[in-house]
Image (cartoon, rainbow, N blue to C red; front, side, top):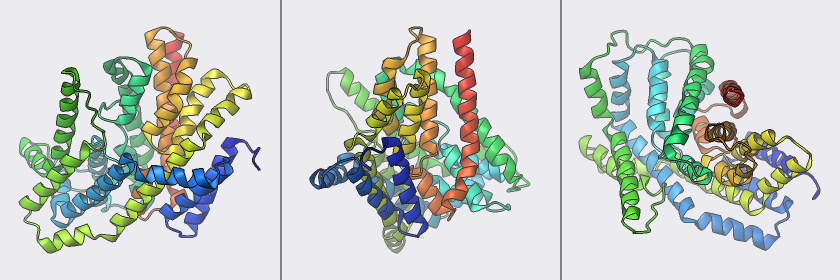
Length: 428
């Protein structure tokens, strides 16, 4: 059993996690069991196993993620209870007649916020937008999940993008210019394979584009704009301090916290939310379930790193003579599938594959990097441990396996088009 290839071990562990979850065992608990089995099977002794769990549970990043997700649920709960969420949807629905467009735009707007579990924030908005039609829970999950993730290919506030640019040693603007096209491909794939099969959903027959409607929409969007403003302000402040010689690095996760706190205060003050409503939102049961899920994901992710599973998979692929370009795309894809987080697949695979890039020309170099990032990102979107997928599925009570067909089609379309674009760039 010890000599089983690392890739086979990973897929067996995923199957075990899915099996326990199908038995209705809490997904967080299922992931913890999977992490323990993974560590033992990859050769960690009991002492190092416990050490890995303790270190990954007590990391500042883990604690920050748990706090951020809890605050997201708290803020979204307050916006929902106060009617802020409904007013936001209605304000945009006055600009568009189709509920599918409203739902997709709501998810995309929240996607501009680099907050872990941000799909929780957009899920109630998507639900309010598309519930008027004959739409399944799986389709709702797909709308929320897919359009929430159309920006992270290039949006410079995301840690995965920042890390990729740093490892590639290219100008941020060049990487952004290369990857914007993948966002356009994702939007097109989402329209064709997710929105179109749903059919038109009449949300507001009197909808008409107007400046008054835009003003109303922006007013209801203020809590989200507050979070965006603080992210920009803190990021710019950190960059300015570094330019003046202060070696202060502000964690991208922690930069979200001040904005969330101010947004919560804003929603409470503007909507005159009572102490009783605040208490109910604070003690919401599913918020604590999400916190457990976050902790479990971070333990699983840490176990992947501590057991050197990704490194073993890479070595196995090279040993079996797999072509370099396949290694370049498969390593990020498998890393994304395994870790379910962009900064994870970039950090695990890019240091290994960048030395394999064989094109000294900048355009070809960036096209190879873009192809690798796209495949890694699609692997992340298809990952059964991706936080946004899990929380979206749970919010809409969608089936785990029955949701995948909704996501696989647009993901395959994006990967295919990326391969075609890469081939054309390298031919000419």
